[in-house]
Length: 405
Ligand SMILES: Cc1ncc(COP(=O)(O)O)c(C=O)c1O
Image (cartoon, rainbow, N blue to C red):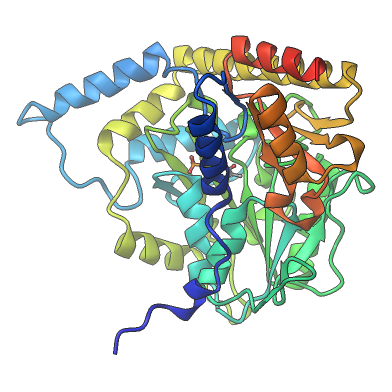
């Protein structure tokens, strides 16, 4: 008899951004003249850079020639890209990572959702609150989350680590020791980032308790402060306890191209001495057929001198928006966080409005779409996320509108 996976029946509603899209579509249908500005979803708006476009064209042309045509890519990634990543992201920062510890993928969303599969269903996970929803939902699907407790708006078997104004959005060690710890820095949604000493404490904690840190560094390119690490492997001892996920989406604008990678050092072992690295290689080889050659050549081009200059331009463009939002909101009397090492601004809702009340208020009064903080977890209640990924024009217009509410 056919039965769906019962864990999937436990999932809550639809994905946060589908809920937002539904509300906005309804509003647009009823107000066809509304000039809506979207600063909700964290998707880029600027086109791919010339160096990337050229690499995409060149690789496509290779596909048209019988001598250079490529079929299936290696499951774990082409060496030309794995080696380039090691040189530019790790060796240059003094991090000891080998090319065969880099697993090329189609992006950090699938990797951050899939990586939990290689760990026992008995493992206890800890997430920050608020949290990128993929970490929680993928563990609900895996049967690791327990039951949803309505009053707390939390899953009974997940350890939540509140990130609040009081703790500067840096999570404290939880009372119960987890086996798997999700950390995202720079953070989506709070836009804040862990300093080196704070991250080092987490690495020490994980090593001490034989836990693993799943470190999502999708926004690494936005770091502007010197004491914020770009990779967790800048911390001593991280090779034995940390898996790092990276993406070309937010630095190079590959949200539609799709490319990312995950680093799994060979030093990570479970309590029985089993290496984690071959498990992820096996999982990747079985369920993933390799990121496309054309995309991987485009990824390689990002690391050329010209490519690096161009993506710096993209990041600066969005960070200029972040500044416009941050400063503009401060002038308007809002309390704001983030936007210094990340393209997100996390603002406190005014007049004690709930996050969804403020969402409706902004949509209805000034036709601006943002993301309600409570959609990322109970500690996000009373906060609201705006992204810096819009155009300058829209960002400036949005802030002017908010100032005049
Ligand atoms: C924290 C975090 N990780 C991963 C992703 C997804 O990255 P990718 O486009 O590489 O799948 C996002 C996208 O918004 C994100 O916010």
